[in-house]
Length: 239
Image (cartoon, rainbow, N blue to C red; front, side, top):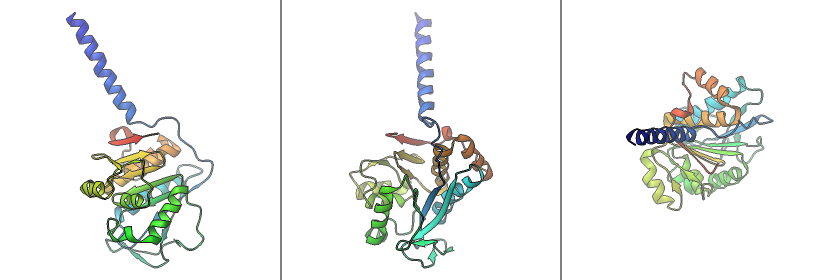
């Protein structure tokens, strides 16, 4: 009887371990887009270098690993020079009010005022709302989630943001389902990231989702990142 009980417990532990593994892998085959995808990076004064450059680096490198990769460009409210929080000068590729490529992936990096004055910028929020509702995917990094939420794009979606701003995020948007202690959350067309160095995780995840594990690992190798989704604490909801 004792041996039988130990066997049952052992089987239960193994089963739980296998279930946990399944939750850290992608469900189903890669999407493999039939055309090149356009990723627009929203830039405003005070945008943080890491949340802008990390996903841009990952997405741009798809061009060297798959026939129909991701083309990246920057877009801003005006076609004026943008100064990042760290002092980098950027000339946007496009402004909101001029013709720009169709946006398949909208990327919203965190910026110095993502939690305050940017949320009162009607031009900015309306643009995010319009583009975000028609894009294939929306990706926020760090406090960029505040912008997505203000644009009403996270209603009914699970999400996350910069760890130190979780409390403020919940207070500002009490109706949202917010998760803590994860690198990123993927809920249907929304991917929200904790930001910082974790911005690479969310971007590589989307690449793996679209183009497969081999492409994501190849890009990771070029960036000296040992990419393995199973080692990244994340949440996949409503997929």
